[in-house]
Length: 262
Picture (tube, one colour):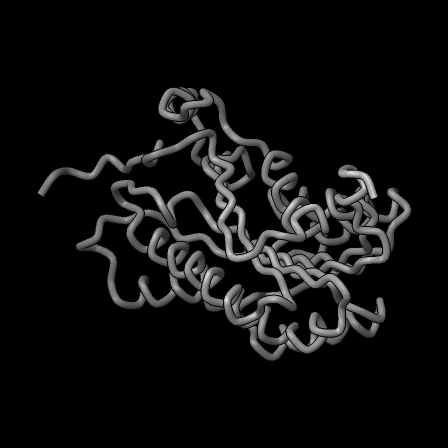
């Protein structure tokens, strides 16, 4: 096998949660391009149907699933549906999460609990449900999409950063528990040009983000998808328990909120 061959996912089946657009959609297409059959789960029928059609155009099988990561019963049913459709499950990619910034005094208990559920708990539930099927694979892999804010600091990002930091350490702890049978890793993007970021993008915001990023540009969804493919594929067969930063070299947040000093 050549190094390039080790990135192939032929014969593998991947389930991606939160893959209707952005990083998730790009990751689904990257895995399909590498030869995997993919199940694309997201809350919007139109989005998952669109990505599934693109996967099929590549000659791979696709299963669009309308899913809400908060729905525990549906998560189990959706995993079973993937195995019934494809006969196996080799890779889980969880892209779910996200929490809006807020000043800490205005971040109540409910907001903190929801940040943990959204960014950590929902993905861990998916992994727990999928474990019996992953254990039957000859090369199982799990990839989370975390965030640079699980590691770096930035004003206004307490709830989101807390949720992602918990996710990052969960990856390390589970790697110890799953080794040597199942690999688990995460990618930690910096500011990436997605539909979500586009909602707040102005020329001024873009200039700030680029200026404060050592690489002087925003990330693309393809930048992140390349990391997901690496961690999902046999190319990273000797990697587990790691958080791969794909953030343009950030050492601190490039998007601090303009909240006043105390």
